[in-house]
Length: 552
Image 1 (cartoon, rainbow, N blue to C red):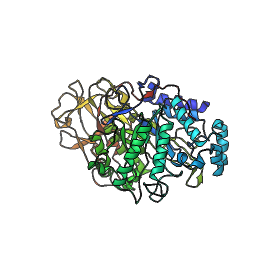
Image 2 (image 1 turned 180 degrees about the vertical axis):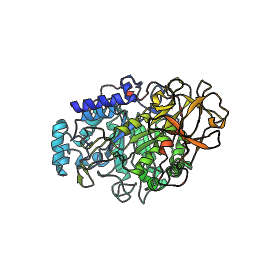
Image 3 (image 1 turned 120 degrees about the vertical axis):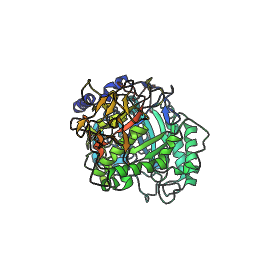
Image 4 (image 1 turned 45 degrees about the vertical axis):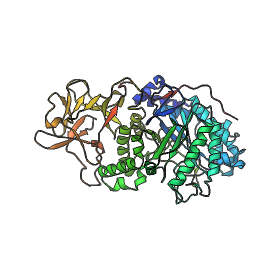
């Protein structure tokens, strides 16, 4: 590993409380299965998939970035950033087009005129150049295993290229590049290829079904066939099903559930970006937009959690430069919902740049966690914030701690905690959060004590007191977002929880409750979240794997 990146990992470990426990994390007993809405290991313990997407489906059909950094360095980047999982994409034609079976990495890049990329791979990963595309894909999976990273194999597209549009002929069964029989053949091949590869824990059948041909009847016919095909070839992996309309719609399941011969392996996936709703976040009031979008999400997909199915948000992301208002406002809402629902997820994307995207060589990816050269984190504050979602808040067997509440501040990824007696409440690591209870009387009480949260006045620190019957001790989640925690002062005025410049918890007049689209309420958003998390340790998963090898 090069010295600059070794230093980067050291600095990030110091900055991130979650990652200080990397070597102490509980070992996962693979394979995985499902227990109601949770993904669990063989011991029945919750395993939260905290993944990053790594694209390998574009025209070269090689995992991105191998011209920028050695493969093992990239794998170590992934684990050092707190992820336990990669959603590794693949194009169907890589396994079903016989003319591609013997194409090497070098030949693939040469055919596309990517001579600079060849030179970069020669420097960083020379042993890959003369492997076939399929062998190179297997080497990536094997190296991730060496670094204790779980892998979800995602059939992203048929014809290699950037995804997705309604008019790319890759969108739905029967499209020009989406022959159902060929697709089943490809699923069987890849499931068989990785049968016995312990870190391959799931197979996603198809990314973002879409286009004019999509319909529920064909969805049932082929997705059920695909699920059965994968399970027959590799009964150890989870089988992940996407919905209609770019992985956003499962409403048809309300009338007719999936009918499969196996149980305990089925997961559904959904995608959620700010641009899924145009520029609503930028042009609307965030309270109203968050409330409306979340209601729509729950109606179309979130109901699966209530029905007892795991829901995997296999794509979400934002412009890592931090300049996109639409993305930034969306993310505050996403963090609040993700903390509350504690679902599994995969961030788009790892890539800082692409070999070739939409005809452009070396295109930069502004949604990428890594910079253009794959040598540094693009936005360390985002990654620090994301760390709060990388460990489970609840689920089977994650600890022996009794159920309680924590109070999450989505725009920072921190939680409300108390300090020494008499000092103000402040935000801090959710790993060290206070355990609260939220009573039917709408008081927020430090669990196991008589101390309740109280509002004291505009601009004043929120405090803990023992007289909990007054109005200033009652807290309600108001606004369409349900993330303003509001209380009444003794003079009758209303305040909301807020934070000051030092991350101390204060109360201020509630803002952005009107339809003013210029106002950003994110700083005043708090979410009361169910938790059974042990408060001073982490439960992000590492793997216990046998020696893995690359199959011929």
